[in-house]
Amino acid sequence: MPALTRCAARGAALLALASSLAAPAALAAQFSGTLEFITPTGIVGPTDDIPVWVRFTLDPDSPDALDLNGDSSWSPPFGVPPEYLPTEVSADLGEGDQLYQGTFVNVWNVFLNTAFLCNGTFTTSCTNGPPYDFEFNTSGPDTINFVSQLSLQPGESTDYLFGTFKPTAPVAEGTYFFYGTYLSLNVFGDFESASLVLDEFGDPVPVLDDNGDPVFDEFGNPVFEVETVLIPNAQASYDIARTPCAFGPYEPSCAGAFSRQVVGVIPVPPALWLLGSAVGLLGWRFRR
Image 1 (cartoon, rainbow, N blue to C red):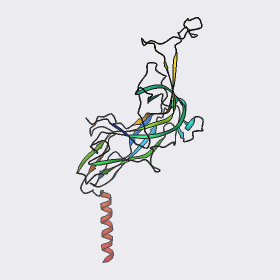
Image 2 (image 1 turned 60 degrees about the vertical axis):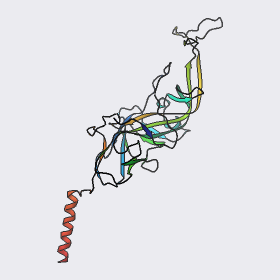
Image 3 (image 1 turned 180 degrees about the horizontal axis):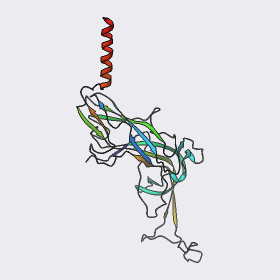
Image 4 (image 1 turned 180 degrees about the vertical axis):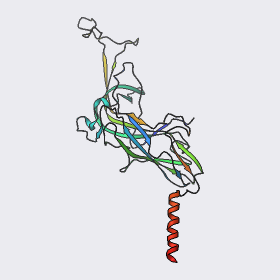
């Protein structure tokens, strides 16, 4: 089975994060939708570049629009409500990389990015060939990588050029498949994490009043000490959508896969052949 290595378009360090801590935070809202290859099948020549166009559709049932505006001074910053920001980041605060739960208290950037799942037969080493190398499309009007301005209402779509397969040499005849790409929301900023203070036995430390007695909230629950940690310049992301075959099955029958048939000579469609024949016949008659 092909490896599920994930390769994101680069221009800044990006992390895909998911886990939980001892004191779980409330689940945040997340934008979601669908991804589909616009032209999933086709016929190409052995030296042809193969562009991969993708359509993202925001979930029709999304309670909010995806309205990135690229403005950090906007309220909310960049147009993204706080509840749609990631609630977990990975950071090394001197004890190795750990996952922290909390909230972004300052947001420096919000943008979209894509990922290439290393499965399929176009390449042999993730994005590198043979028979093809894959190049992310990271600039120009057709890209969605690093885009910080996009407005979609629930159910609306946008098309973008994900990237291009480029042959490393004339490609052998056959059919080649690609299965997985993701679209993610990425956030940079200052992140604040709150966690329970634990004693030497791993138990939460209760808050005590001036008399040394445990403090209880209005519901009669004990109150425990909480440690707050500020993580500056934190990075986090979550996936908004993925193509249908991103998790397999990795086989030609997987509906929604991207494929191209490589042939030595690209056949001319019948309608075009007839048009050419008619034009030739008219020219012959004109000469007579």
